[in-house]
Picture (cartoon, one colour):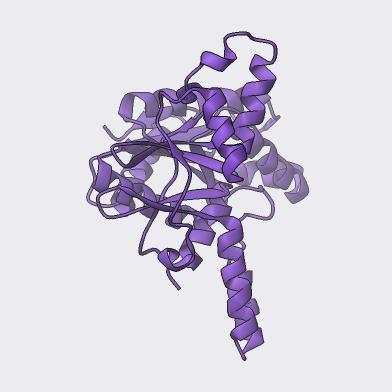
Length: 306
């Protein structure tokens, strides 16, 4: 089943210059849970209920609010899905990146419709009802669990889906993206010294600290073991290097004891890579080489593939 079969083709849209009060009126009149902000038929932003709550929490009582354009309210560079993507990949993408609304675009990046998590879940519910092999359907749903159960971040499958989408967006719209590959220094030593329960807690604490240092558009995944990967959309090499260093400093500030190492605390090494690359797999490979240089160079540092 393809996204084009379940999406809502007639979606509510506005331009970036549309006044906020008018945009909200459209949402109310059409009973829309979101608005897609377009420019020349291409999605440039999205306004959801969360954005409405956020702007009112910030601007309540501000007399300038009625005249503010919708660009002040929207989430820019919305995460989109291809028209011919499968419902399964769309649902994986939506759940892994925790977005409820996905603008649907064609091969030229033009807006074709909107699909929500509810559309996708309803489609899967219908499939289950129609499927005589119920056990097979349940197994399909179990595969949609894309969150690492310990660190509560995206797992390896979710990472691959998100990277493939970022690469497609790069090729279609020339939107750059970068990755930061992160490894916790001397983590085996930490586990040997403090035990695996303490190691699990340290992994969760590190993941939480990294998430606090990320932008709303960035996404964190467990690459494997004590390695993590950050996907940074619409980000070039300079901004990615700054982000990698910001993440590294944040983990050091936790000051988690790791007394048998040279610094006495838990630290991370970071390898950063940005396009150009032939594919997202090569980009991750470049980041891995940069991470190796960070390790060889003394750990607790950020290296770039550029």
